[in-house]
Image 1 (tube, rainbow over the protein chains, first blue to last red):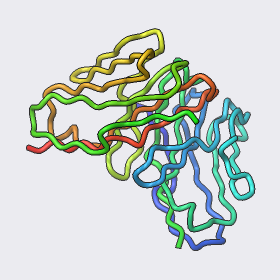
Image 2 (image 1 turned 90 degrees about the horizontal axis):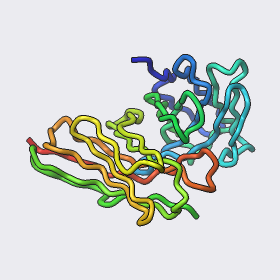
Image 3 (image 1 turned 180 degrees about the horizontal axis):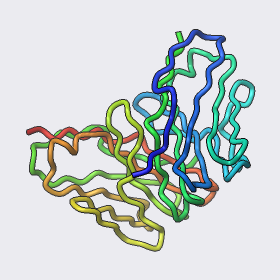
Image 4 (image 1 turned 60 degrees about the vertical axis):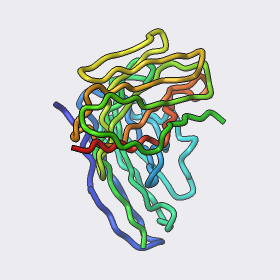
Length: 115
Length: 113
């Protein structure tokens, strides 16, 4: 079964540094999501793409976070500068289309630890 | 604020028992509800998706129901097995949230051999 690929699996860095996460969705999936999951909580959406366009980034801390999906396929999420509170699991998901009629498929995530 | 709540936060049962996990949501204008499984350190695996026009969905030993009027969904697991041990999350696509899923905090299930 096709999977959503994410890298790296783990990232440890010091505060004030820059970090980047990469996601390759399931082939043919037009919708891509980045979530942040704090330990013991459910995921919260950071940004949603439809093809190469951002359709929802209302929960993205834009002063330090950025996301792009230049060719409408894979995507990168960046944090600069990282803060202690950014320590969390960053999950990428994709779906064929809008969520109302399509399930989201998740990758295994990147666990970020800020020292 | 739209919320999704899961009770209990943790559940421990002996192998073979049938069990029910609960999910409640505050907005009756729901488009769909999705149940996920999450193993430690892993991403989410989609189990069942119920559209607002449906009452229930079944997959193997799993059955999920949706009652919009009461703002509740349940996930029924029959004949539980140790391999079912994981955190189960429900997520709702609610009326005014656009296409953003709102997740509960999950129920951590342990099935003891």
